[in-house]
Length: 432
Ligand SMILES: [Mn+2]
Image (cartoon, rainbow, N blue to C red; front, side, top):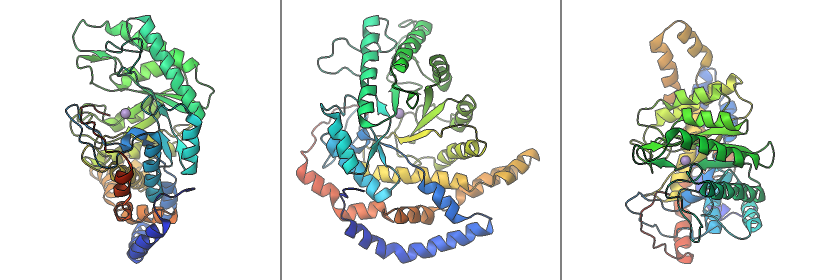
């Protein structure tokens, strides 16, 4: 951390208060794991290596389509957002990269953004394009679509914007572009379902051809509904896979956990995309109804665990060359976004740690024997293990806070930010 925004002495003093209890709890967990033949240090090393990107838009207060209730000290621009992301990383030590969104994070001098990130010890993850709303001065409207629009001129404008995002990503040192397409229709007959999909694939192929080199990936996001309610052009993993396969090896699918109907078996989708060699990344969040954008692991931590369980299984099967990228994509409507993002990164690492505890040899044996009860219990036993001390110890060793939210509240960072940043007055709707 080149330039800590929270006084390291404060974090150290806060850690000292919790150090003895943590040492005891970690020791107890290590002994318990050791009896199961698991080396806690090996798990700790793996968990410490798990990195989750934070979205620049996540540090602002989110909203629903009805209203937004701004919080105190909200970031006013990308430089404020980087500060908030740096605090999340300083205390949590799990989120070293930020994912930018254009044009929301647009500035004339991208080199200055990169330099500020470096000064704060932050790198840059996938950049995100936006053709789901019109910008001031924009020549053509996206009201009836963008990359799949019936008018070639609108498609060309949307393609050009995505290529511009790639260039900005290059300036930041990023190596992926994520495209979420809002295109769809609200009425049967409004749009030609087959041709709209063909136009989308052709547009994405043009964007793919503009990727700088083979280190870059194009992450294609799908979503089952909204803003269109009758039909969405890239509504599911099947459509997404067809598009990624049509476009080529640098195009991959991105699974946003909230972009499925309730009760969809997402871990099953994960296995299919891995089998196709097309799982590019995740947007982590949680939901009960639709695209709720609630904090990862806050509604159904078992489901998050089951997703990570498939990732650990695939890794041990050497089912991929490159692990999928992990990013949080949440809307923080009623919490301090910094706290939500720290807790959500922790939830991802918790699910990963629990998945690493699964005795796969034993599971495989029970599966082969059709011993259903014990196969299920093998998974549940790993999920029930409280790895809290291990996650805290990983943070402590990395120079972070044993209790990130506690240290953050003690620091008074939000209050200080509120004093120097103008109060956000935007209360209009809009899911961000
Ligand atoms: Mn998303």
